[in-house]
Length: 252
Image 1: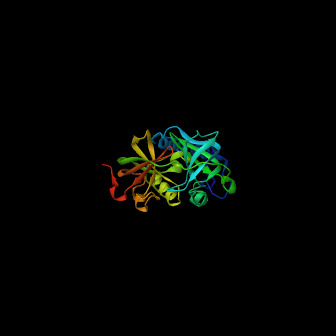
Image 2 (image 1 turned 90 degrees about the vertical axis):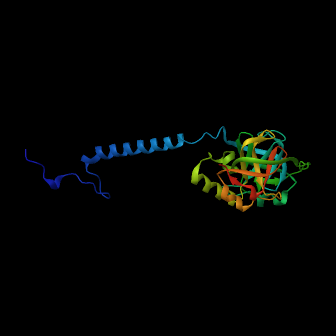
Image 3 (image 1 turned 180 degrees about the vertical axis):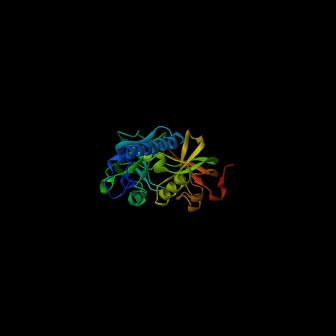
């Protein structure tokens, strides 16, 4: 038998139908690539810290009293998903806060519907789009008086409350930091996750020293282990950390 003509050797051309003699090689290459990609993804995910139980818990509806400052929160009066007296974060869709949707409802009784979020003792809700997401209803109630818990020096990390409460699994590194800053720039509530507790909670809604939104200067410290000082107030069942920007430093 004569040797095969060199011009008859199989050759792969991207736009042409593959030669039948190449199918085995192509299938093997695809399988090896898939297994390698899956294995790499699994190993990367396995190295991430477990954020604990939590996440999206399904659809929720709640009647409560809106507090617009420093970020939208809702003091629960009645709900099948949240316990009475709970205080929950309110978020908009995507990387958008809910501030513009609740400014005119501050101190009023509302009905809110959306996706329930929870991680530990941190509760939140992604408001449904449109007018049905949050609207005033008949009812009576007043905002709880803030309770001064004193001045504290805390160690922890500034995160965005949306992902932290369960919209996504919290990550680490530069990608986590960039994602958190985009969320915070869009108006989502910042949450300080402390290494210690005050009033049995390690989660603190972050505010400026005057009780307003978090100063932009603190965006430089997002997703880093830091030490910060300021007063802590209890609003309903939620701690609010009034951080003094000049006190924030990287934890060594």
